[in-house]
Amino acid sequence: MLMYNMVDLSRNAKAVVESVVKEGGALISSNGKPKAMMISAMGLDSIEADKMLWRLRMEKAIADAHRASIEAGTDKMTMDEINEMIAEVRAEAHAERETAGQTAIGRHNVKLQAV
Image (cartoon, rainbow, N blue to C red):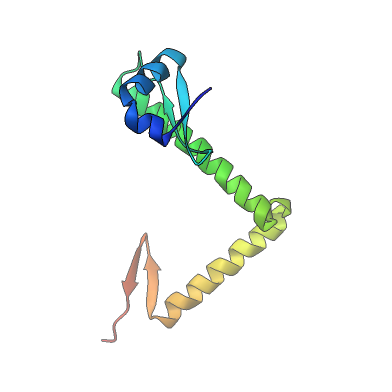
């Protein structure tokens, strides 16, 4: 895949875009590290291009979450451990709501008032 640095992009944006269209894509780097991607949208309408971009964002979010779970060591948790952690967090949130005098009704939090 092609790679351009930020200086190339700022000085020769038209040429960079033309090469992206021709080659299909390029990475944009800063200080030698990838910072962004450019992908050709030739032949796509705006809805198709938006769907493609959405899929890429979702794949990146999944990869980021996976990387974070490895770094935190949570990638090795069992389903029982995960469910226990979820139950603990929900119990804490419920206790906080009760302390604040709130209750969940549907999808809305409602502040209870004395009558």
